Length: 186
Image (tube, rainbow, N blue to C red; front, side, top):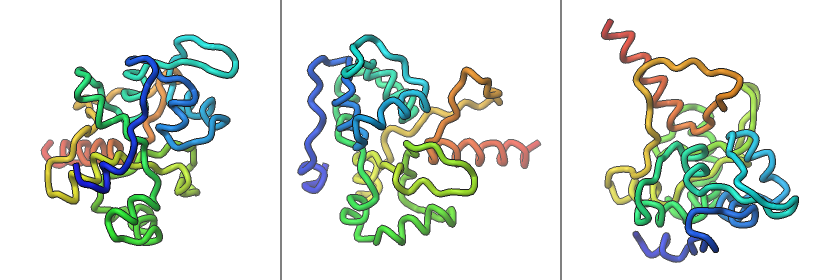
């Protein structure tokens, strides 16, 4: 990792496989009061906790929000760096925040796609809820393979009311491209 990423502090979990509400808020760079909407929107299961300090499985959080299944502790370490807002991405890449947001809206972003943490509909942009995985931005700028790409299923899996809709923009783009590619080859 570069010095810019090294200047970020990873979230230090009190328990290696459990995130508290405060730890989840710090990792997602959201206020603690926004965590219930995040948990509900992504379908993350609560393990335990009181009204003020719920606990969630780190692996469930990574799978539901990032679309990544972490198998080893060393794979989890770079994911514990807080998700970053567009201002950090702009400072790190040299692009302006408005240029990044415009590229997303116009579907011409060349950077790794952000994760949409806030619920929006087709008429509104989710600029305030966009977060990036620092390791992905760093790898992109060093022209290395992008780590932690969400797993995409090859067969169509219909969404049901019990299945949350993914708001990982990168996963949605890849899924759409895979569908178009299959249709073109049929």
